[in-house]
Image 1 (cartoon, rainbow, N blue to C red):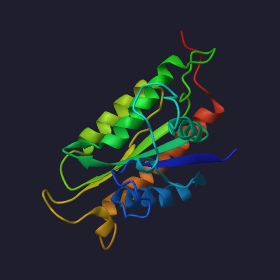
Image 2: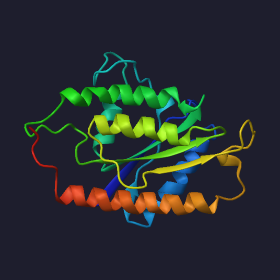
Image 3: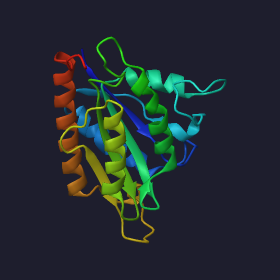
Image 4: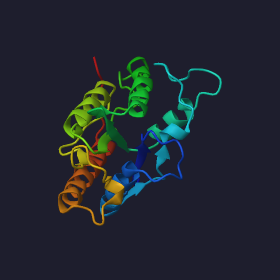
Length: 204
């Protein structure tokens, strides 16, 4: 069975036609994952969907989360992308985390949450400090609801403080970003393969 990855772009820009630096970072990871025979699905622009506020898996009429939840869980790797705003991960990403809180009460007969055996990595961009803090926010929350975090799981870029150049506007990708993306992809693909072949033991 091939390993599949789903990128979520948690930019604040709802229009999928509007250029996004998060998309540009996801593209770097997409190429890196391709070198490890991971099938990367089309990126989901989360802000374009009507994800209702709440902490259940279905918040009623018009809620787009149930379909996105199913799509996420059909994949082995989650590429969680988002921008830094005010020194922390943006609000759209936090909405996704809040909806995943429902995983805590959705365990199967082995005590596994729906995300057990699945791997998560991050793609963070911004023009201010906060890449490490944003990744820490994501990793702690994702781990709490069952995701497995590999070694070197964050690929990020931050521009000059109070600067005006975005990642999507760079003429070439910095070598450090490309190198890190390679490590993120290699480690995530390796871990996802291991978990596919050897699931976690029953809990409790």
